[in-house]
Image (tube, rainbow, N blue to C red; front, top):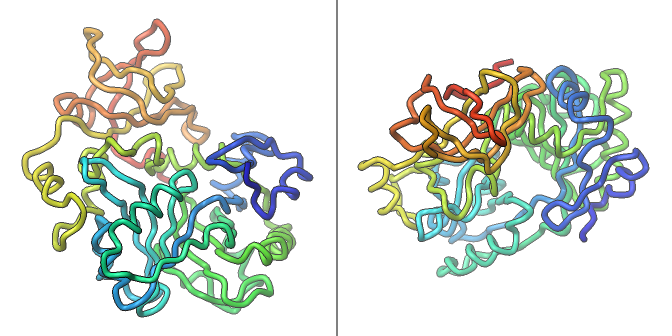
Amino acid sequence: MKHTALTHIHESLGAKMVPFAGYLMPVQYEGINIEHETVRKGVGVFDVSHMGEFLIEGENALELIQKISSNDAAKLEIEDAQYSCMPNDQGGIVDDMIVYRVEEQRYLLVVNASNIEKDWKWISAHNSHNASMRNISDDYSLLAIQGPKAIDAMQSLSSVDLSEIAFYKFKVADFAGIEHVIISATGYTGSGGFEIYCKNSEVEQIWKKVFEAGADYGIKPIGLAARDTLRLEMGYCLYGNDIDDTTSPIEAGLGWITKFSKDFVNAKALLKQKEEGVHRRLRAFELQTKGIPRQGYDIIDETGNKIGSVTSGTMSPSLKKGIGMGYVDTAHSKFGSQIYIQIRNKAIPAQIVKLPFYKG
């Protein structure tokens, strides 16, 4: 079991530690609802150093990224970030990722912790033009400082105006006494804030200064359980739940990051899906009575026929109702449609809704 550079701090704070993607990670400190509300209304800090980071460099870097990425990285200016996915050649998704253009011929790819080895092999296999590749995952830490008070709480730690870093933009700048860290506005919670990429040797100093600076703002450490409820309220996909090796980006509602203006792995098959339609779609739903939907529960119609399955579900701390996402047969996927979630021996009524669940 791997540890992040901050594991000892989480343990000293009394965090409940659990295995996650090969790492020992803090799942909660005080409790999911308290931590969730802290991020929605104030400021909280996640240690997400388990995430993977690959540097792709050189004159063929963009060519490689364009081949393996569904989105069009040619549109990226320096200090731009872009959400994308890596399609496989079977109609599914190898992983979703964020692509950062750091310099003219230098890109940072941030991938999911559980997929680091798989992603590295996949990208390497498509590196026919020998772009320079470096897996720096084990050397770097990542903190997500999230919430509406994040900018005010952290401004004293950087000479950069944090309020000017727009969504999906970043700066390489000073932060908490450390030079040349990435300050990125690519949050996964829907409540604002930013992420800090730094070396493992630097993260403890940054963590301590972050909590000193945020003391007057009620800053708290936040676990992965609240990260999951926060992202689900926004309808953000989680790899392994809502997208995986068997789900296409078109089915998953990720057509907006699937650009057919360039060639990429499995582009022809995905274009055919876009033009001809798909048999199922990822949809969001809200329960209309009490109940908590969970991954794997059947989605059924009024006569009890299975029409899909839940991929993510929870009791929304903000909405105080059961919410979830799941793949549903296209015939039943219209917004406003009545569906039912099979929870044990009961068919719980639910309605298909548009995302996000949480509108702030």
